[in-house]
Length: 324
Image (cartoon, rainbow, N blue to C red; front, side, top):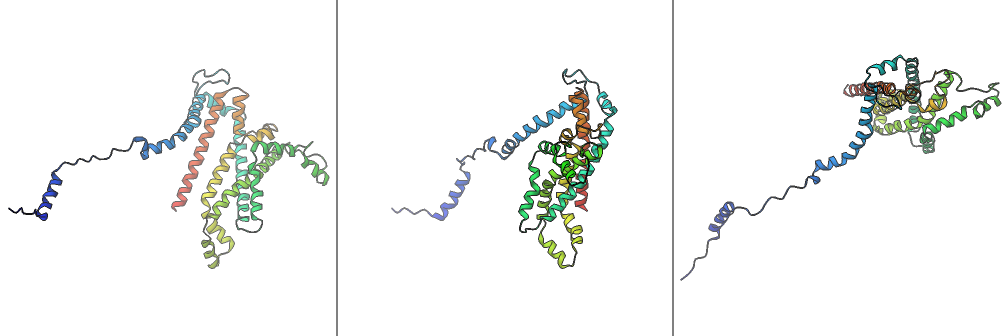
C-alpha cells in the first residue's frame, strides 16, 4: 500500500488560513512607564525653573500687589486694605515728579551715549587685526567689576580732598581750586553718566560685536562690488541686519537706567538738594526711611507697569519692522 505524499502547494493555503484563524498568542508590548514618556521628561526638566520662578518672582509679585493695596508699615505688618490710598500718597509726594523727570533724563542720556559708543567700539574691533584681541579685552574689562565696587572706586576718584582727579587738574593748571565733581546737580549727573558709560560700554560692545560677526561677509563684498560707499553699506546693510542686537542692547540699557539705584545711592545719596533722586531711590526711602511698605509697593507696581509697557511697545515695533 503506497501513501501519497502531501502536496505542498495545497497545504500552503490551508496553513495560511489556519494562521489567519488561529488566535495569536503574542501580546502587544506594555506601554512605557509614564515617567519615561516625552511629556513627563519635559515636565521634569521644566519643574526646577517653574519652582524657581514661582518662589522668587510670582509669589513676591503677588505679595507686593497685596502690599500696594494695604496699610502695611515696615515693623507692624498688614493692617488691612486701604486702596487706593497708597497710590495717591506715592504720586502726591514732593519728590515723585522730580524723581520721574530725573530718571527719564538720565535714561535718555545714558542710552544715547552708551549705545553710540558701544556701536563705535564694536565697529572698531570688528575685523581681526594684530592687537584686536587686546583691545576687546580692555574694553570689556570694566564690565567684570560690580556696579557697587565701581561706584565706590569713582567716589574715591571724584573726592575733592583725597581723590586724584582734582589734584591732577590743579597740577596741570586747569583749575585753581579743588573740583567738586558731585557738588552740583549737573556735575553729579554727568559724573554718574561717565561711570555708567565706562563700566557698560564694553559689555554692550560685546553684544553688538556678536551681531556684527553674524552678518555674512558676502553681503558686504557684493555691496562693494556694486560700488557702495562705507556710509551706504552702514546705513543699508549693517544697521538693518544689526537690528536684533540693537534691540537687545536698547532693552537692557533702558531697563537698567530706569532701575538705577546703586550708583546714585553711593555717589550722591540723592543730592545735592534731592536733585539726583531716582524712582528706585524713592522706593527705598518710602520702605526703609519712612517705614511705609504700602507706598513703596505702589511705586514698585507703577515702575513694573512702565517697564512692561516699554517692552511691549518695543516688541511690537520689532515685529512690524520684520514684517515690512
